[in-house]
Image 1 (tube, each protein chain N blue to C red):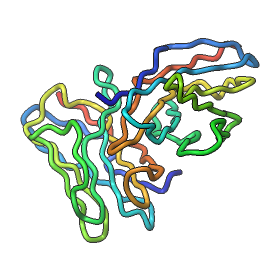
Image 2: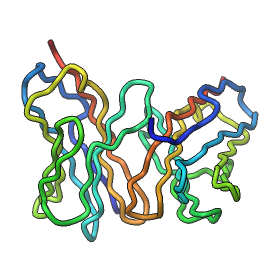
Image 3: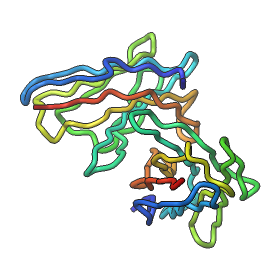
Length: 113
Length: 110
């Protein structure tokens, strides 16, 4: 158990819909990272927040957005969903930023029908 | 462009045999390097990491990795594989953001 929690574990929705994935980092960690894992794209970094502020951006689509709240939990919002958005979405957290070790949550499996 | 390459998509070894998983990175400067393992349906667990210093790094579960600057490599090794090591292994590098290799799926034969 990494100490990072993600909800929900599974999510099934339809194309065009909007969903929110939630992540609670390990106690004391200030950074939260979001990743997407799919069969064709592999594991891709989406975005990082550090202490409430966006810190780094990866291959995140404009239809996706995220935020980190004052209690340091984070939400990833996916809108206008397409079939290709079906994937495992991981959240990770670390104490600081950059070279710090990241601890991964169990992931949310999103299925878009 | 910065990238991490794992040349082997799938490797099969017999239980008790030795294992080496390859990882190469392409960065201007040496990044921080990691190996993660992912069991089916699970998140990623850190096996070991290299920041600087001794180029042979010991990790959990009997794994080790050797950093070779001249070859831009960070290969993962284990002297004797156990059936429970069957999983997907990811090499990753951090410069500004973390980039993962495509992963190597390890199958262990009895």
